Figure 1 (cartoon, rainbow, N blue to C red):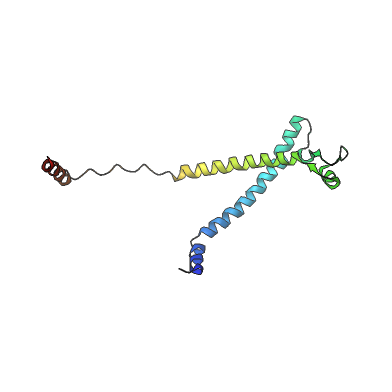
Figure 2: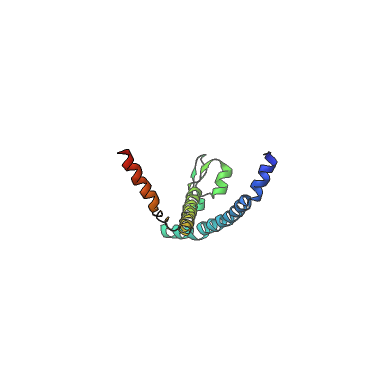
Length: 137
């Protein structure tokens, strides 16, 4: 089978379309989670901790003066932006949890009834086995 025909078969199976739909929906869902974490969760956590803005939390590595915003501090030199890392980590945890729940739900929906018990052995087969065993003795 030539590579062109293999690719045509692959592309027309629906796998490519399923993947494309998954990537597009995943990207849109990722933006929703980004917004939820950045605009709802992190401000609430910041308020609980004491009016902390996680987006501007950093450690200056190049001797920048204190009180600069993260953007200004990055222009002045290297910074360790742990607030941004914290936000992205929480974003990842929420996204991973939601995907875990979706997979769990899909697996529950896919479960089928347990396989049926095997059919009983016909009497003629049982009789033939008994004859075979008697002849062996």
